[in-house]
Image (cartoon, rainbow, N blue to C red; front, side):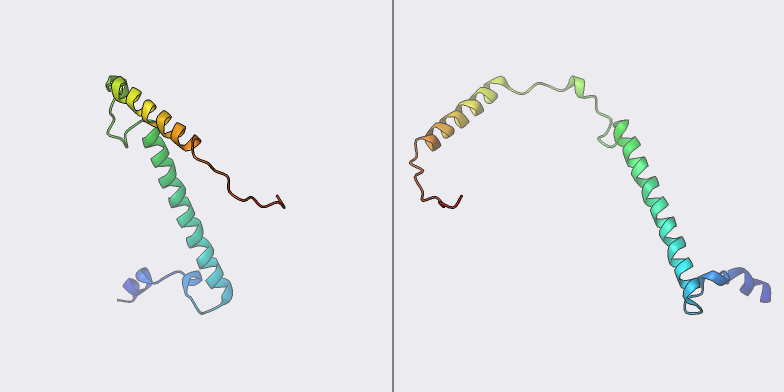
Length: 98
């Protein structure tokens, strides 16, 4: 029974409250472990995105081009919108200190 308690007990540097040095060592070690796990996770995401596995691995070369008629209509709409904004009288008082 004594061996099982010794096996399950924490190392001497992981006991909080015994000394400030032990507390800071524990915090520092767990910080390093969390940082390494986060870096490993970021690298795995980068590699998955680089291989295009996150987006389902679809080949973008076979996708259809946008509809040219809708594209032309959108350009005309925004050109008309810009013309109507330009025709507005935008004489507002301005700050003379600028």
